[in-house]
Length: 418
Image (cartoon, rainbow, N blue to C red; front, side):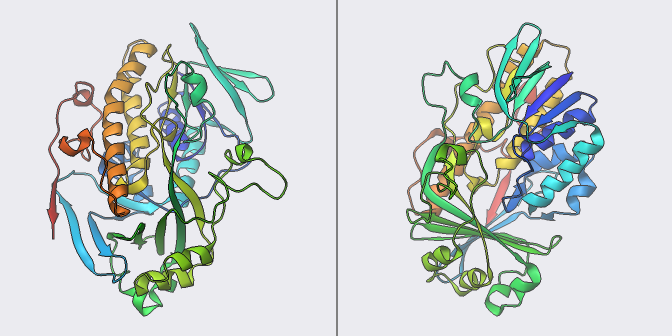
């Protein structure tokens, strides 16, 4: 099958490897002149680790990932642990924590080895479909024909509106009033400070929150890194929705297609000046940070084109807040489910519809849960919604065999709070 993938973020790279590895003819198109290295820590939950292991990537990801199953909730100002959650009997597969840059490197190297064609600095202006296939229109006016197109160009996808042009409601991102600042320190440097060293003793995921701010941090022993994410409600050093207007006169619309800009570390230090000593120490050691606006997509009316040959994948379909640590994992699950379904001897249109019917309810449930977690971290009351009554049985231990297609239940995860 001829598969065209638009966007070489983590999702696009993962899809390119998966399908090239399976013997499909894959073209991966990226508009930037180089792959973006922005971003910090990411989680790979059991539903996704199962898929990556099935692709033969276990050893490569174990080399860059630590296992974690414990989440510690701390008071922002004292650092005291106020609660902890340990997942037990969740899955037979690991719960990994790693870093975006090295994950990108692992996936990219495997895409190359699998034989996919990668085109960098390749602008895609339009996508369409007909009875014989899907067509990608490039910026120079040329076209590429494929059997299926996976649109993986992220939350700010400019192709989403073309695919869903008949949507009755907006399909644009919903930007919050929260700005995120991501920072990384060498683990040896972090442990050189006595206050910071106290929270660098294991690889648990730590969440501190108070007064409209929150901090998420953890250690990666394999990479010898300390990663921390600061969330600030209201106060921001941004001058525009996504990024500032640049000195060369680029518009906000143009900048919306670029990576997030560097944040002002001094601004973050000021906001968190009254935080506990460990976080103050981390900010003192930091010299730079990434910055982006917290945003999500509304629940879209559909993820597929009417003919079923163009699919929105990952953040272009269901960008979510990071507070459930499921964003990347849901992208991998998208790909794993599609990989299985495309192996069936059925028309592409029916397989696309089946893929959407399986994936969309699950992802939207997790997206709602992630939003609720964010509101809790910010001190808000979680918005009312059906997620509060839903069984979380399929949240972690997710499979991609006939049971998924038939939507059978799987074992319910258990959590111990200490």
